[in-house]
Image (tube, rainbow, N blue to C red; front, side, top):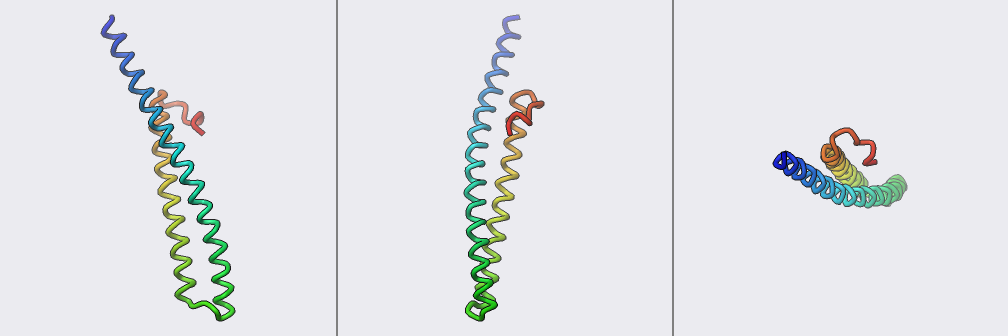
Length: 105
């Protein structure tokens, strides 16, 4: 049975390494999510200013649509980051046996 123990030890080592890698990536993505949300909040404020300037006749429609495009771009990137985050959470869950996804959040 020593080969069985060795095989089990290798599996535990592999799972532990996978979990550690996933946790590092998750932490990084969580930071990216926070930065992206902060950027979106700033862009929302800027969009309000541009919209007010547009309705006052001091900004062009192009300027207004450019701010909206930029805001949508940041929201799309946030969604992409969140999708990656969920994928890593599933990887981490698999590393701990596949039934502790709630423990990661």
